[in-house]
Length: 541
Image (cartoon, rainbow, N blue to C red; front, side):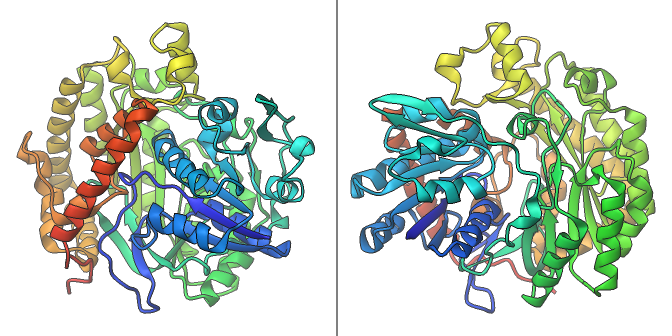
């Protein structure tokens, strides 16, 4: 049968440097490719079905285009995949538009948010026939065989006679090598690799993609829903299978890969075998990954660097041990320092630190300690985001017990902790301390790590307009002045505070307000696009 798979994007969070074309004619997009629907596409194609994919990062395939394609080609099944709370409003709007255009096509939701909230999603969005929970590969194959009677399809939520039915969970699949490599070539997009900074900081103009070598994380940080989604289990592909995918990607001309594993650094022998396979097969692809600072695989950082690991990202979160303990990070400041230092000594080119501010029980002194700690670490790049809470996390459960949220009314909403938790600092104060902290951090880096800073800026100026690199440096010194470069205006993958605020607020709107607000948003984005026409991310020399 004919299947459509659609990756829903919150337009605040994907990046569109410009409507530029790669050498092969594809539109270039800054951001991560939709590996979820790409993986499902290869699975259903191997089973004999025809599959068409759409990624809403593509300016050539807006909702209206997708609706017209559904009317024209009349697929039997349409799957909408989205990851987060902030994407859910957009998924609802598109699902309702599809149902209005075709009353017979079978519609399904999938992804982390849908999995964790399946019965509630089915009740709120009855236009959708099925909500798929957890891993999608075998579930999709089973469902396509039983569209008219899905009672035996495990991990499926559906409705019969007006009653929502939760089919039993399927056993977590550990044999990940059985699935084919993602279908990357059927989507007419080329992805540009960037860093999660305050402007689109391009790392490479090589052909870029992502790879998943493992799934899950056994730790239970209070703000993360990954352990719940994966039932606290970590599962991996074999090193041989990972290396075979590297060989496949090199044959297709890819030059850069990022692992979307939640914790790549968990199993030393596996990491060692992957690195050995990369070197023995003369694979030149540069790659990046992320992991915990307490990994026992740090002795393999030199081997990773030799195997072309260029980027390593750590979830550091805070420079206050009190706050690390509060968010149940189960790591120490000493472990953080050792991991970052070891990565740089091993020759990892870019070591990034993720931090969160606006935590429960966090004081101004804790925040200042975090920025001072980040300054002393030999990090190349860093990001400081406001802590948010959403359903499925331990923090959400804590807030329910404290009476700060109502599960029946707030389950689909996304809150900044500082907006609802009286133990958090005020939002404006958080922003003021963050601006001051960034100023101190930047000055410290320029004075104490000048060579490291110069090398990083030199990389960015290869692919970014110099004005944007300068803006990256001086932005913390501009105070509360608002405004954005053209690159920032067009960025939808970069976590600007204002855009994150807008995305969070959108989840809190009632459904009858969504259509009006999204129509206004689309009109504004079109206006910005027209004004910025001609802006191109190209090597500047």
